Amino acid sequence: MTASAHDDPAPHPHATAEEVEAALKDTKLAQVLYHDWEAETYDEKWSISYDERCIDYARGRFDAVAGDQPLPYERALELGCGTGFFLLNLMQGGVAKTGSVTDLSPGMVKVALRNAEGLGLSVDGRVADAETIPYEDDTFDLVVGHAVLHHIPDVEQSLREVLRVLKPGGRFVFAGEPTTIGNFYARWLGRATWEVTTRVTKLPFLADWRRPQAELDESSRAAALEAVVDLHTFDPGDLEKIAKSAGAEQVHAATEEFAAALLGWPVRTFEAAVPPEKLGWGWGRFAFTGWKTLSWVDEKVLRHVVPRGFFYNVMITGVKPGN
Ligand SMILES: C[S@@+](CC[C@H](N)C(=O)[O-])C[C@H]1O[C@@H](n2cnc3c(N)ncnc32)[C@H](O)[C@@H]1O
Image (cartoon, rainbow, N blue to C red; front, side, top):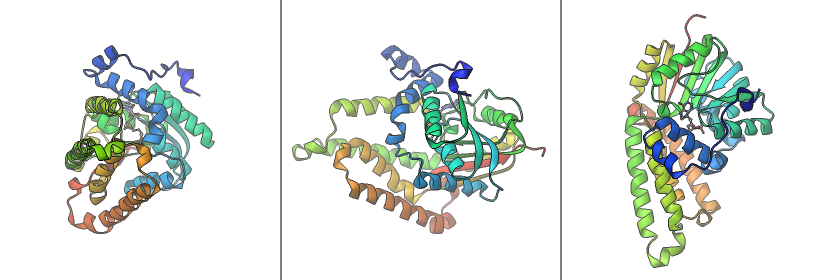
């Protein structure tokens, strides 16, 4: 089954000025325009790969809340799949045998299906809104999502839909959602890094560290649309309440990345503000080793002394009653 088998809309990567204007007042149109536009370059932009590095990362997020479950699940669904980063890497990591990738953006579904085919995975896909999931009741053993809940207007409605399409006893795992406190300091650090970098690189002797103005303007326009698509941040306890209110049981939220996020956000913003060729292998090594080291400090030390709401990422799991 392919995306086109459901008469899904075609990708629309070149939005007109009128469409962008309309999208500023319509979050779902903004999602489609923004993510269709990003789809073909998304993996490169976010350093997404389908090798051991990202398999370990995806498994790590899954295991942090559902690591004690027997694997593999037979049939899994991903909501807001993007290019397939989470489900395809989880499947490669032995979490599920077959999968269905879905996203509001046709461009993303197309890339996710292409990635799955390249990896030889048993995956179908279709365009789908997470608030009205186009699958029958009791279809899946596992539903996953990464960095998608904060884009969905009615999160509880979406989780009700997740529980509807799960088989009784089936599990959901959503990861990579921003906490309210984490998002506050991440945005602040990102903005400060952007301001300092784009001002300092105006100095004549740093001119070759400055990206062309047209590219900087495009990044600022993308950031404006980003403000329309990023709808929520979550307190971990509130997210647990939403999941329970949707009807889930065995609900549990966990958080991660505090020191790692304090380094990660300035690093990512700096990378976006300067010409990529300026940052060589040494920079990449510094960024990755720094992130790994601080993640270790978060896990081994800070997790025991810092309240969970201060960490940047929240993930949540729960089960459909009635097994
Ligand atoms: C931040 S991206 C994350 C993509 C991917 N999960 C990842 O982690 O790389 C969020 C994705 O959610 C999709 N999305 C946003 N709102 C949605 C909705 N209501 N239903 C389904 N997908 C949605 C977007 O199109 C986008 O591809």
